[in-house]
Length: 257
Image 1 (spheres, one colour):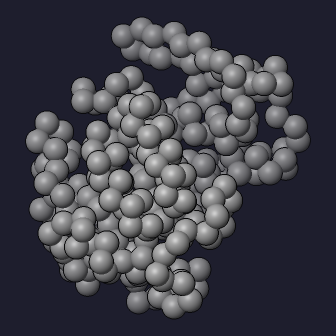
Image 2 (spheres, rainbow, N blue to C red):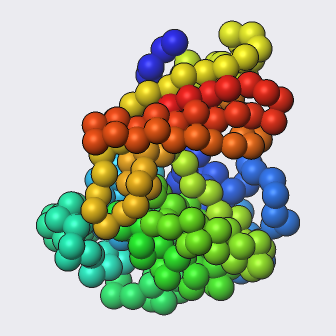
């Protein structure tokens, strides 16, 4: 299996499909004032992850490829960060300046951001804050990509998508490993029928987030990419150094991470 992440595909899917969600079903078109016939103005909430730098560079580059045509990050709200997560609070100032240098306007609130953009990338690294930050975006009818972790609890995650359905606003979240070349080829059937799969990967933990919420998404995303949806049950084995998850799919297939 080719373990090559196609960053261009990931950025496109998250920054374009994730915010415009032009390519996905499940919701009727969101009721927004902007028709997306011209430039798609993208706003970022949260500047405490390197992802916001990568997305902005890819979308705002003077020589950006045609697949990014009409998409530009125009405004960003840094948020106050999370004082109990060093990876958040210690990086905001530097990342904010890097984004500003790429011609992005830094604003002082989510409300101000929403007045200036058509779609939103929710990049705040702390999943505990995602529900609170996502709600005004949904109420404003702005399509949104939520970076991992989608939330810091199952309750919050379910609420986000319930509210998205309530307001008829498409929302997208994904790990970049969904776009590993080999995984996509398997998902498309190029390797034949998948009878089962074993995936593995790092899953560092964060004391403010339970279980595998912080980083486990990457290996689990890979498993569901090649196995598909409809996992009906999961058994987890945990030791101090290892977590093993075994799922049974509706058709009897077994996948593990």
